[in-house]
Length: 163
Image: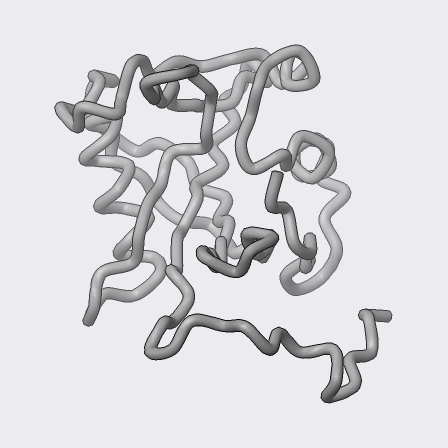
């Protein structure tokens, strides 16, 4: 099943008083087999991500998904189910992100890019083009399984996806 950790395998150089960041990413695939993605821009590059973001204190994971989609795309959604769980741990242990992925459908709103400066574009992209774009974290194959309804029962753990 999973990797068996002995106590000696746990990180010894973890930062003190640090806790992982919890994020929710939203998978929305429309009737044309297109997935909703957001283009992030950084000083040195641009890359696509699933819309979503950091969980705020006191909100549920579902509330986070709804809020983040509204902020980034102006769309209103209904969360259907949790589908994946992954982690991203930097090799030097400086960052640790826990990602929950939910499947959702659009129930309202008009698509419009949010005003966060990191956002460059929002668009639907054919799921058949996923292997040709830069997507972070690299969840292409898991999304294709979700699109073909080959989901396992419960939540699928995708492991450490730091790239």
